[in-house]
Length: 133
Ligand code: THU
Image 1 (cartoon, helix red, strand yellow):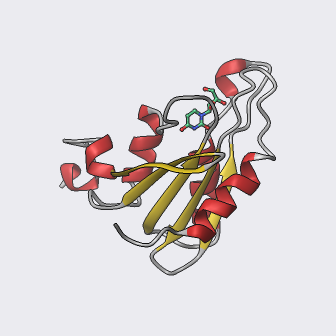
Image 2: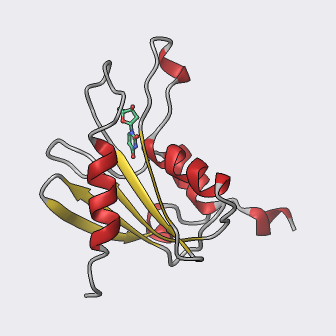
């Protein structure tokens, strides 16, 4: 097994503590390493008008894009609860915009790594920019 990206795991855990999740009480942190070597993190931000909230992955992607980086090399998502906090369908699509099928997506809990996926495992047969031709 490859070496744990402890910096990303730490960044996701730290930003998870900042999550604004008063409705679900389900705090999530995400951290991305760009191909250029930057580390970007973000948390979920809920809203009293429920559909207006967004996921931790979306926050982290937005921070990466704002810094001018356009390629995701590695992703960590940290949630709570008993089960794996895998990215929702919309976030899988958002990640695919900037990542490849082999990009690692590590799912963590407060205690550390729970499971390692590739993006293709989470989202096979994805619609992406290549589909557009
Ligand atoms: N959530 C994320 O931020 N990322 C995930 O990967 C799964 C779910 C958030 C959305 C919402 O604020 C809360 O978790 C409960 O669904």
